[in-house]
Length: 286
Image (cartoon, one colour):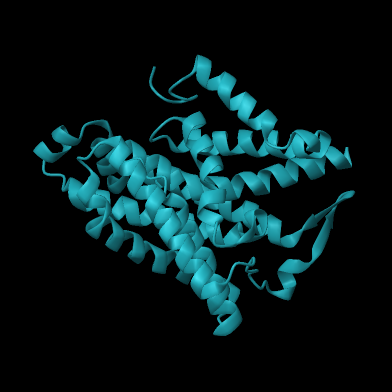
């Protein structure tokens, strides 16, 4: 039973990080139809910004939990206006080539400024402890990661379904032309949503630095997993993104624990089979 609880906890922590990084991409893909394979760049930016600020500037970890996503949100908004916005009406091939090129450029810059080795994010002593709950022991930091992931998922869901801003975003996703005809400023919605997705990616990148290993190839390393979450969920679905991230976390954790020799083969096989029968994902439109 302790093993089952440990696996479930590790899977939930892994899924929380995946959800934070991928949910912004799911929404922006559904909203803008842009194949942003470089979404992991914002996660890497958040991780490096937090690591440098904490280690070199003495910034508190809790402060960076807010400041890193805000800084990357500004960066994402600028990137959307100056770079991404120019490619909205271009072909998918142009978008993919641009994103792959951006990943390589940012990775080279990270290697130049921060070196090729992994960069850890220093944690407060209080988060590096373990607490006993029943007969199981849990790492406090991962409990915090799970809590932040759950709170973020709930807040996003409430904001999207219960607020005017959420109604505007849903309208733009469903029918951009109709939304514009009733006065919705879709260009502003695009920029704001893109910035918000970048902030969530930065938060996930900071929290998941110890999961994926913060290094110059970080954006490329997480690309496959983020794309899997989006593909399994279907475009533009927030509930679907959370459930897909949870499924990926469970499959990856269980297979790594019981069948480590197969690596990610089981995950890729499961996704392959799923997409054969549900090419638009679990929650995408048929």
